[in-house]
Length: 76
Image (cartoon, rainbow, N blue to C red; front, side, top):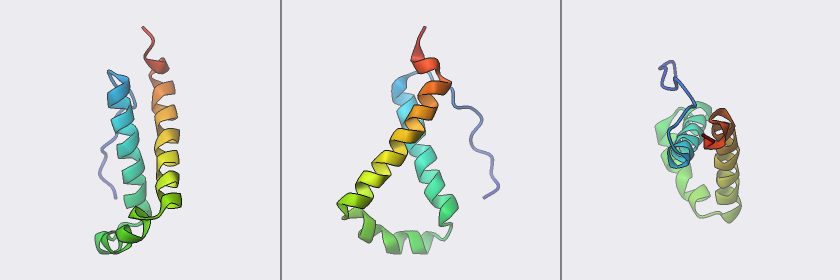
């Protein structure tokens, strides 16, 4: 993937920051497995596996920590 889509980690609100963290996480998966057919084929396996869902949540949380730090935790 060569498209440039991320210009900043700065967001106006924590909600926007969390949504950015989700986007970062999803894009990471797309970079790791760029074949959409394979992604669709594998989704039922991880979508119903509690350990995989927890791991996905952990990745989002780590990305949210990064975004929050970049935003000085939205302190004014």
